[in-house]
Length: 465
Image (cartoon, rainbow, N blue to C red; front, top):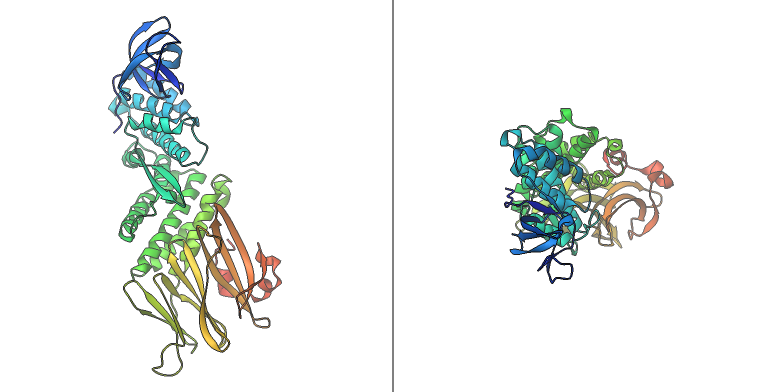
């Protein structure tokens, strides 16, 4: 898709003035940015007479602000060498993409490999991140976006959490995935870029989101793991786990069995070697932990209730489920009932105080799981909802971890992402009013967790991973 106009020079400096005459005091017509491609039409007193097709304007600029370009097959090796030099130079993405476009025009089709496509796409992705305020901004990111746009580099933008997110549309990454000459490492890195969760538009509807998750899983599952570097392999497995967690949620939301997707998310997560990720990629893993933790009940099978204090789920309005506490009297209405448009994971239902309380995991969003507590207060049955956090967290889950009969305290674990930071906590709550009594960053810092933590929670939770 990249196209390059006939040109003989490329601008290498930002804010290069294009003047009306070959003089430093001449009127400045406009400023050019690194990566701008020019047609050279003449030379006079150290100045070049040029024409810039992007701005549709001609003028003069100093000769040391540009480098000559050759677009023949003989020039391809030199262009590739410059591209390799610039591909990791932050702030020089526009210049690198321009050289990459020149290389694609010069290289014979039979000699084309995935390397230049991956390099251009990687710089486009980095430029989009800079425009979103991540990873350090380019010197003049707006101008650089205009420059790369002339080469067919397209960006998508949308609002997320009160700020604009910009993402590269991934066309060249798609080409890398389908290129026969691409290595497994190149294809895996392309798939990781194409499946970034932060580049999913929050405004997507359920059907479009489900289709996108299917495309993401197909791209990730098509990568051969045998030749991958340890870092890439662990990143790939973590991303697979996050995608299958999303699929499990969508399947359960539509009333389908999510057991296979739930098991696949756990299998992929257990295949991640955290030490291979390093500090730079650790946040990707923790993000996956939260997403899989929110959907982990998808892999569990619902048991037939044998306790008279049991919960039942009945459909209500389209997409809505009502969970009620069964009344021991035949034909009587539930003792208490609450409805949700989320997923009530009935396999998580557990009586925690005989005749007094039942807990249930409910997941209203892909990366958000609440804890419902059915309990008595003043002799009346009520349902309280405990969210993962209270300070506007972005994602997270909360889960039942045990019960202390003597003090009627509920043990819970939380894991959430709040203001870009991941927080994990373990707490003791009074069952009567759900007020937090103790809190710690590790369960071993709370004495009751050592004796009264639930065996099933300890076996299956990801909060101890």
